[in-house]
Image 1: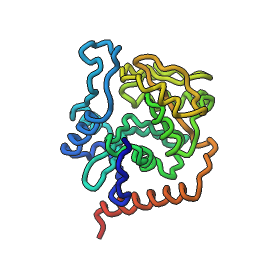
Image 2: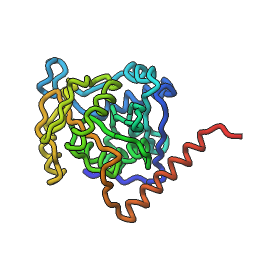
Image 3: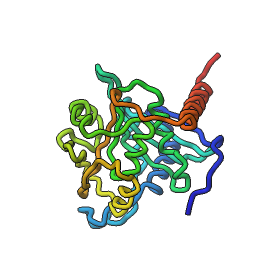
Image 4: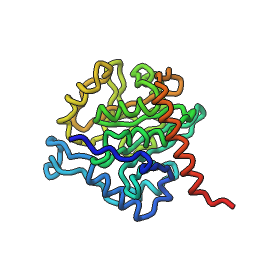
Length: 260
């Protein structure tokens, strides 16, 4: 059943350092993830977790708040938290690199471009060097491409694998030696055993542009785009939507500032 289309003016987005999250916000983030992310694989090494809802407690977000390089983009519908994208930033001589370490949207508000706008709230029209994430969901890779206006290229990732591994040092669930990029696939051994049942149908929905290979249990696809890549073309309507979202985020950012 299709989700009800909500009034776009009732959505708002904000970004902040994880260290500035309140305990109440951490609790809301924990509930949003635990109720909406998904279930563990039926092949999980720990039998008691198989086919169970994946949950994260408030302590996970408290740990993220201890690192000044961790940030979060939050999406609200009116005063309800409906989406979150946690990410880590690495400053390099070539520019900032960003890795989205968690992206989740409330099931009731999906297919309304909330995930795309969360990612665009992070990057906007920035001149960052690289943007990426690890995921077992092909649709999330499509969202990354849509938000950055660039297509994932395995050859570009291979060329910049040094930068990716440098950024991976700040991602708790990834070790640089667990990253594998070839001409036919890009994966990371994250030991995150999420259910893979929907993957075949999601790849089919992705279309002929799918460039990745198979995904083993406990692995996730690794997808990155880079500043030097060619931008995808936008229609006037799509461009206007991006500008509208950017302006709205800017207004909300200024409204939170203490100004005389």
